[in-house]
Image 1 (cartoon, rainbow, N blue to C red):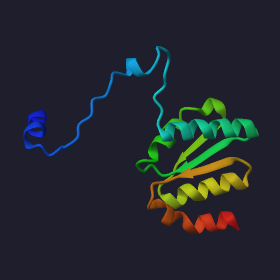
Image 2 (image 1 turned 180 degrees about the horizontal axis):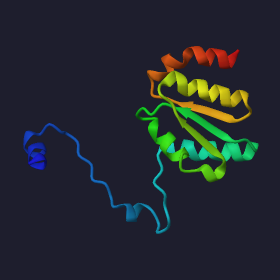
Image 3 (image 1 turned 90 degrees about the horizontal axis):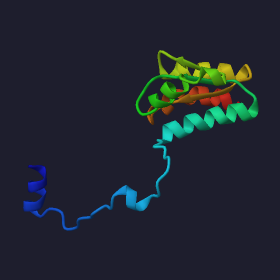
Length: 125
């Protein structure tokens, strides 16, 4: 029904046909990776290169929750995750871990940055 609607209403002046992926890419092993997954792997690699434990203090909120979920799977690399009760506790825990010598990070959605602004100021000072 959706296809027929698009064809009969003529609302779409331009259409594209996408070639199969097999024609565009040679055979091989590929990984589908998102930005959150890439960030998680990058944080683990940075902590390993710096020879520091990695600590994430985070409140689970979309779209940042994927970082918490992924990092919690990598305790074997010295990663510690803390699921806080709110945004402010997440950044406070991360700042405490940074003061204690860890490579510490926090995650948030866009509006959560406003809640974290006072602790960001403390971290900078």
